[in-house]
Length: 229
Image (cartoon, rainbow, N blue to C red; front, side):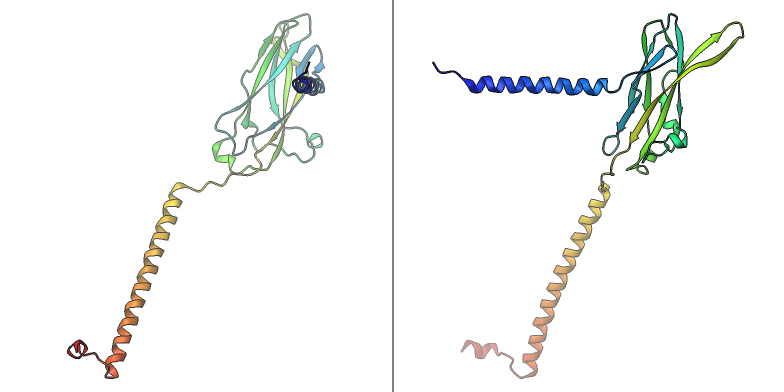
């Protein structure tokens, strides 16, 4: 009896590969645990955003999960901030304009032992994209718990957690030649070709005329009647 060991070997290798891939993804997920304080937690605490080459025409959206671990409902809000200078990560700078990062909802209500999401949108104006290649920005999303004190009729911040956004702009702008430049180049090539052909033709005509003049001056003109004899 002959066993097909090749097929079994391929299946075993494939199974081991998927197990390794699952463990690798699991380690990456659990290496960034939620950040917790004062009965609320956020995930992720840090996020690196690498923008696609040449930017994109669409908005870049990310979600921050906020969990309420308290025994009562809470309201949370998010605010875009610049980190303090001594907290700024090495090789990173402040974003040129904080308005390029926005949070869709002002206040999010989270029931007890449940989670909700804050949606963060990154949208760089088209007029600014070509000015910001090869840059690294650090932006903080401060998530705050709001408690409404009915007795004092005022709202104050109880807890604040921070999500660190590291934004990497495209490495280099793709060279794009406007379409009208192609027509200009083709036109110039055509004009140059015609000019070269004209110069060659004119030079050939001048050369023939010079030879004719030379023969006439030296009395070597050809008589047609003599040439027939």
